[in-house]
Image (cartoon, rainbow, N blue to C red; front, side, top):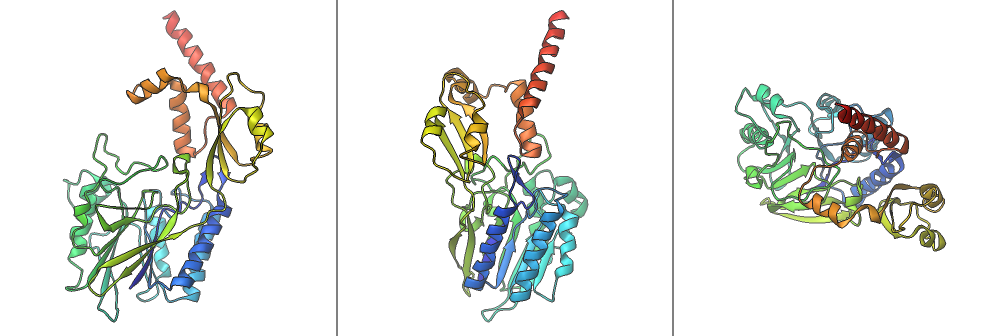
Length: 380
């Protein structure tokens, strides 16, 4: 059996305020080509199809067009689960696409985790699709008030799923989780709403599965065992992913359930890059690029309108800073876990909720309000 595993598309996402529509179209085109070239029996999309619970219409249209094209041109079986960025109800509505045993779509939790059974010459394959859910939803679904962390949610889902796996069948589990030992990226949201709770799931929780197709973490990687794998996100969503090769995961499963895994590289239309140097030097020796750029200036003094000048060469320059802003004392404080400045806290919060840094106008407003608060404290 041949499986193509992907996840974390985040349709509708922006990169520091710039739309990623063209980038998403490019990788979806490459995914369609991979389906044509490799003829997989099963396509798995392991959650976070969208970047937010209420995605823009363009994102819905993009997903609908892709699914329509591949179902019209192939007999591939499709399995989709909701991730933590998705609306479970919205993903669940995609189940109207189901045609016989060709589609399994799981949005909301179900106390009876029934698999999709795919009949093969080598015997049946059972695919259990475990959608993401927070602890409170799992407690209600499974009637278990002891569910207190993401690992408990996954265990409850797996306990239910195992009851419906036919004896002797090869078993594939699709889940959206943070497995112990995996490497993270800056653009991933926490999976637990319990303050101070443990977010990770032990790899051995999936014991008995022949392949575990994971979503949530954006770096392609195996964790715990070769058959427990993240496909990773198809695009880079932060500068910490610079230089990281993105891929789809192609899995060959034999009659015993043993798997061979191959990464199919994705060629992005725009990468993420960091350049560093004095502004005059960067302007004097330009290397034009459409990549998303982070610029770190090594000038001692502030420069005049540097971003505007740099964008004439790098139209997708989205972040600019000065090397001098990271003094050794600041680095030591950061290493010791010292508290961030109020301005940095506001900037980090905005970056998290809208994927855009603090603008100059907003920074001025924040500084004004902070100065006013400091003055009030001084008068008190």
